Length: 394
Image (cartoon, rainbow, N blue to C red; front, side, top):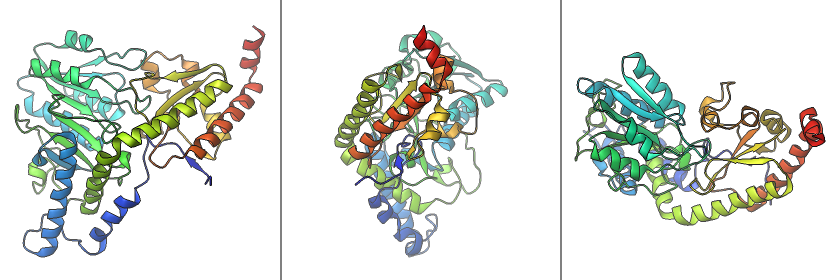
């Protein structure tokens, strides 16, 4: 049975898995101690739950449990990683390399560091959104402190070659940070095999709760030191002060446990639904263009440009389907997608682009409904478009 509305904005956020919610519930009303309280059972149980979640999360990425620092989300983790490293190592190096297709959390942080005197190189991606490791190598100089690259793009789903980039950074003694908000729990990552020094990620992109994230900080070979961005109490090994959100952290751990167990089967099922969505739409409508790499992409992401069908008008005409025209974190901006612009998409097509984000609970019935609705509405918008009529005459 089809239940409306259909939710296809899972790159923005996901619903909490019932198994995750059930794991969290006791920590709201029964085990409600402060994890930093070391003098009574309520605190001990809360602290043990936090450490158990930390171990589960660390295990999925090949890290040690002490290398996981809990934060409020990937944005805070990115700020701590980039600003913390820049401030600590400034006396030795002051050059950072990132890319033009990063999430705004990275780009805005880098611009803030530029205002403080740091030099930042913004590497251009190719037309698929991929970063060329050779171009990265050419951008490195003696002052290069850190490289920050998005693992899987939040708008177009393209997966970057982090293992190759990590190898380059390791050979040049440069810190390597990845934004894994979209990729963590969806595709394999091993911080040691990939030579990752810092990794930012969140729970709510993988059917966990909002408001909790983590930063992986390498503890040896080399040991990474960061300047704390929040002072007061010295929690999380001094990297991030503040009372821990125990229920959310417990949910984060459970969400990661589920992701680790179901990653392969879930990826296969979702990619088949994504391919059905793409095929169903493009078979019935011409001038539909895929944004991002056709193969090196997340299973749950499909970003399409519909020529002569404005994205805002298209979304308004199919309110039964929740999709987006780009990153939810930039939804207040009326500017065209910086990611699509960076990979060379025509500006007219940028304004005609929709991101479909599939998830754990997406059904085939929902995909069938979406295919039919998109075809119907795109055809209607083109019928009333003078530009489309003119293109058909020519």
